[in-house]
Image (cartoon, rainbow, N blue to C red; front, top):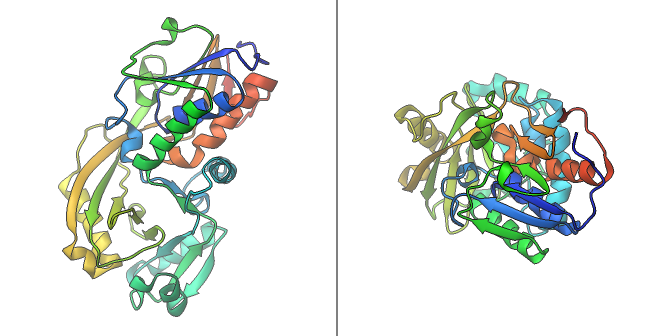
Length: 336
């Protein structure tokens, strides 16, 4: 087993600069370790799963379908996001539904906590663009969201500021590296974790100045949650499907459902300009739960599924606590 209680200045190599690896690198660098973060792609990271993520920090909403461990890690991660990036928007999230989905809406309310119910007037006061669109909504005031393509470079900059080194275009394996190695390659780690699978999440980016939203709006859907996430510069991300497939691209059916969801939230989205279609493959284990594996001189952090941005900070904290103090979280960690 990996020897714990490493010296603060002991070298740590992290493979994969997506959201999982970035948080590992940041917390270890801040703790005084000599961190090198290796990423096989370039700094734009357009091939990374994080590039296509929604960036939802919504542990209460996710409780409707996720295991309790996701809520626990997610709630802890909210504190870390606030601590490390205090400008992260934490202005809540909304859940709405049309009358035909009323039963599913009420089920969602029963399955989740941390919300309060708004009537039509309360919803209009919170989001004026939605006035007259829905008769009520669930408001989760403590949830947040980030824009992955903007926040990941911020995390990378924080790593460098904390004394870490980032090497883009560095396609390395654990055998190439000395000291502690933390493997955050996602699906790239299937050479050692063949049980991983890719779950496709599709997204569409649209642009319009006709609708103004301050927070994500999740629309109840019979097959999967569909949400509209505001971005800067009048952009909105529409997501996200969850398909057991490993091909890339967006299917016609998914595009229709995503665009239809936006139109159902507000008809003005029908005149929006489509900026981009895309999809990412989320790494998932058979149980869809994250795992920190410890074997020999290496730690693997993987299986974040659709919760990467939500739980990555807490997973990094668990890894650091294990390395420095030998603490083991039995719900997440597996030691061989």
